[in-house]
Image (cartoon, rainbow, N blue to C red; front, side, top):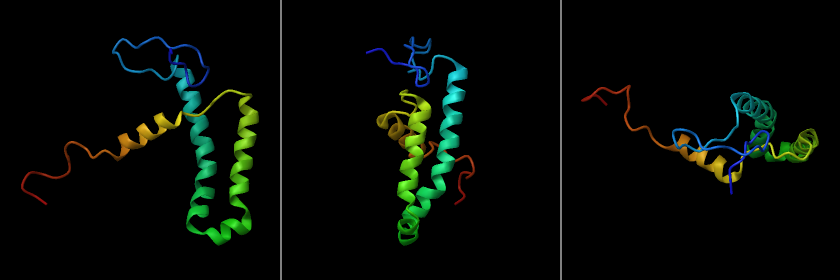
Length: 111
């Protein structure tokens, strides 16, 4: 199956370097990431409050509000899938969690 642009679902041609592409053009990459940042910022505080202060979260029905946001985004997206597949998101998390190969801030012989 040929990969598709995460923004417009257009088929992607392989990159010249052999790396997997996610978008058909830079404009679509920017649009996709900007939407994710905006939506993620809206969810961040609600999710953290839900995880750290459950009694308040249940009283304020924060999970209901998070689900309402997702439903409104689904309507805005008009049937397009505008999020990364779970496997891709988990791979991004794994890449962040990987320790660096060298620590540029520690000089040899110092702790």
